[in-house]
Length: 339
Ligand code: SER
Image 1 (cartoon, rainbow, N blue to C red):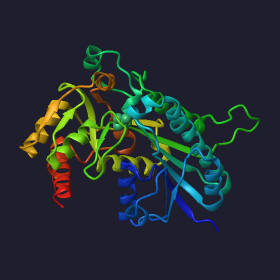
Image 2 (spheres, rainbow, N blue to C red; image 1 turned 90 degrees about the vertical axis):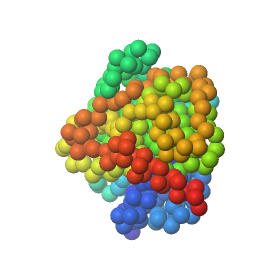
Image 3 (cartoon, helix red, strand yellow; image 1 turned 45 degrees about the vertical axis):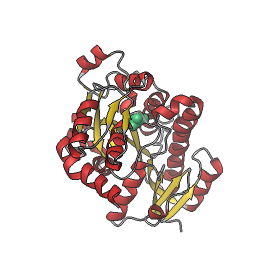
Image 4 (cartoon, rainbow, N blue to C red; image 1 turned 180 degrees about the horizontal axis):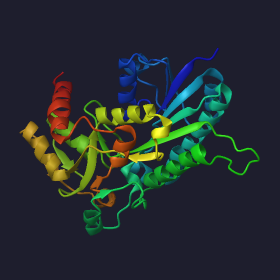
């Protein structure tokens, strides 16, 4: 008999790391971790199986279907917004074709075991595209349906995959003689910039926040690649994991839509610098904006309206900005570099 499992793609990335740790804490190790790179030993120890492989490899996906009974998929693998601009074709393959492959795997799995497969998909504030700074200021807290005009390949990929998920869940093969559910229960959160005390992101445009804090803790100088006034919403990793958990556990009838904003606090780069400098008085933080990367941040909203997530599935962040710094980021990062 095949064992019921949860599949996590992009398992070694920063969200994957936090998610697997949380599963392990709650005693769930029926996990299949998939990543392009070999899964590190500490993560591997928390999973039933760990596989190094490519989500574009059909043979690998067929092997997963034959070996496991998959009931939930956390599809975290993606090429982030900065990296995707250098290789847009590859980004499209990984971010869109890879996601379609996983949605099809969910569909096929559901047909085998007869239950819906929950498909949890992190989307991003990168799906928004504000044309200029005055509009960004006026827009304030942006709702899900507003400004869906991404300017990055990554944002376009995420925006389209949200629609793909909605299609598979609500309209799959709607013209067939006897339309049947695809069995895919797609649910997505649009994350703001994420900051982890444990891992550093790679290839994203909101990475300056995590880089600034980690550099200060290591005693290294940091030249921030956006200007002092650049502002986007952020969230610390424990809240990002909480959002995924809450959305995955929400009863289907509570969901009025498939894609939800979530956020915790909005911060400008100079407010971030001030908080980091207060915690690490010797921090050497300067601003050396890279105009092109800074422009991407300027197209993302200064804040998002996450009231639908609150109303539908009880979303509330545990960490506002004060608590994020004093109880999570500063103590955890300081301890990490002391060792
Ligand atoms: N953090 C991501 C990036 O910067 C956005 O989701 O690409």
